[in-house]
Amino acid sequence: MPCFVYASLRKAGSYLWLAERDAFARLPESLLLLLGELRFVMEVQLDEQRKLPVEDTTQVLAHLREQGWHLQVPPNETLAAANHLPYTHSPQDDRDE
Image 1: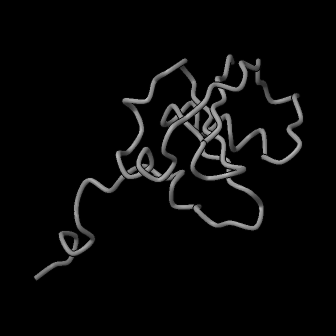
Image 2 (image 1 turned 135 degrees about the vertical axis):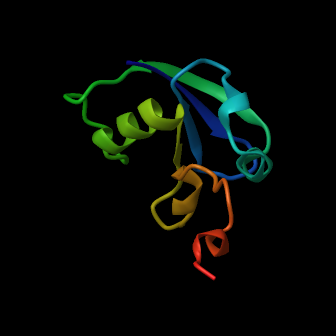
Image 3 (image 1 turned 90 degrees about the vertical axis):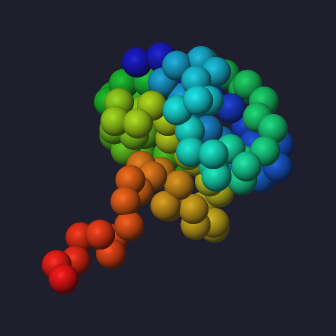
């Protein structure tokens, strides 16, 4: 699978992986605001056999296939929620009243 990697100029050490080049419309607006300006870094052919130095290849591929993007942050930072699809409704909507 071809992947396109962008570096955040605002969040040092943060990289955005996209399944399609320049497909920023797929990203949540809050993520775009957080990352700020992005700089294209490289195109890489990614498959299950390729080992990545920091990220889990299987997880990156799953995110790219499911939502079209994956966020890589430095190991000491936690932005885990950024890799999840946005909520479409409030959790309170699920309660029976």
